[in-house]
Length: 174
Length: 94
Image 1 (tube, each protein chain N blue to C red):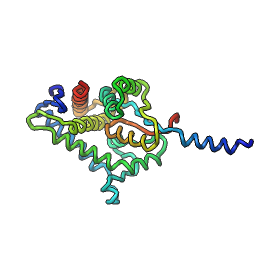
Image 2: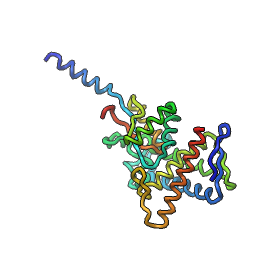
Image 3: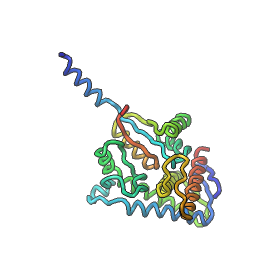
Image 4: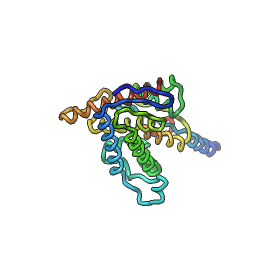
């Protein structure tokens, strides 16, 4: 990976074929997790305008972290909020992950317009939140459990994704 | 004693007028420069103010990033969840 650079309103980046494949796979996992994990509302009319949501925070901690309660101590208000916002939030997250995936090029060079940049920022955040939940990262400085080779590989991917997102924000800040 | 009714009404009015706030909570995942970018790009805060709020989240575990009506705060919270930040709505001072 080369650090992102701004060129007008575009952000240019470059990844190796292996990195490109990894990013694409991770985005696909976000799509699959959210598409399967969220319950479709029964009312199709409401669904068409994005209204509807599940009955409470997901039992999958990763989904629960992506779609948290909006109130700390008010389950009823949290539930109402979920009903009004969850499905459209899920749709946006899925659309972001798809746009992210589509902007990856086999050659490794990516050229991101403003919409793609926003999709990248959010999808990278979502992917890192999912991995962090799977690794059990709960506190600042916590690297999560590293019992298996898979864990250790996931930790590497997690910190690399942090570098990718950090570089993207730096390019936007420059 | 005659003021009781009036007082009650005042109290209710106060309660109704109590603004709501959007609270952003610290998490171990989101990068400091990303959180600061979100505050700047979404709320339109200056670079300095965004940094200040980001550090408050990081050091104190939370920061109030907006105050106002309940619906508006819910919109902000939804936007924060969209960015992957952990945010909640609550009554000011609660």
